[in-house]
Length: 383
Length: 125
Image (cartoon, each protein chain N blue to C red):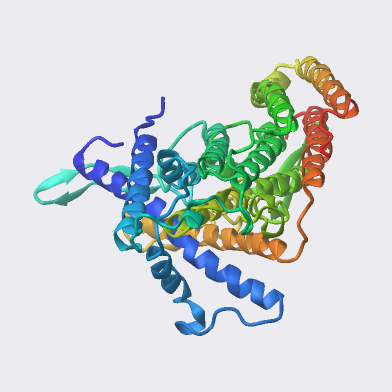
């Protein structure tokens, strides 16, 4: 966490800040979803409260806070209350492991009569060299909150909804893990920072042993793994329980699935978990396949540092990190918009179609992707 | 080795935040008048009187899906070290052996997958 008080303090604030960043994206996403879906369906979304309806979420939050805290007589209180909180943890931990920008390097400075040494603050909650495996493992914990919520509600509908949701989640985790194997073959590392750094340059690969360089395209993962990117994207939709894999929350089939008996703040926390998973999914897509926070050749750490050459080294580092974070955010928002767009365009799958897609379509194609990538890397004698 | 203390701190922050939100609901929420009417405390059943016991008849398909997930997940875990070290094998000139070994492994995997698809273990009615 750091060697002295200043570093520990800043890191602690950073962890809380990144978590709150994730939480604060939720009202924005809900607003974007309501206005975006209205735009797609040719109607107005919320436009009364606040400019462009932006205060709608605040009003809804106040309304939700004042709802009654209620549980039927068959439910179990301890699990019922802890399930929404547990649904926040996987998304928050996974979001913290993904680098949002370059590290900020602070030079030694004098303050309060003491020299605080040179620091490096990474733009992520925790720096883990096994980032990819960590995110996969933590995302698997999301199944627990679904099951606990459904079972502890004391209602048959909730239980069946929870079982179906968890069966869907674990089926698509296989396709998810297998698509990531393709990425690992390319970049040869588990660490997110190294994956982003590898995409920071011109597109160069080996063609039967000869290096080939296409200097007008960046070295993004999508050019190497189009099939893998598509498979990962579909699997991430299912992990986040978003339409068209929306059956855990289907209104016509199971009332509201595993969160039938929830109301008030607890359902807000479930939505936070779902949108948090959406955020993590978009962040993963951006980091693996679209260059993360860099945009070679215009916006890379080196070009920005030389652009801000008139500032001190600390100032250069901070401004570079902020600009690259903006790049990351724009790419993230693009993928979030695609999530919303797909939700309001495609109809929902039937449950057996859903499970067939996971086991009989995505899993074989992910295997094909792995084999083709392996053979490709071998034949080209390097990547 | 990475320090995982920040992970612990992040989890504690999330738990505190969740507890804070729940307590907000407790303070600001409408109060329950005891005893609530009997109909209100029954589980939701589309407005009709529900059965008294929660029927424990769950389709066996869920169990099959979970077991198959565990098996295939462990096979996938074996692919991860291979994916990371494949380039090292390639640089040492042993790329072909590594590739063929993994393709044989995947063929066994694929055979298992297609067998259990064919045996209708994944047939959802």
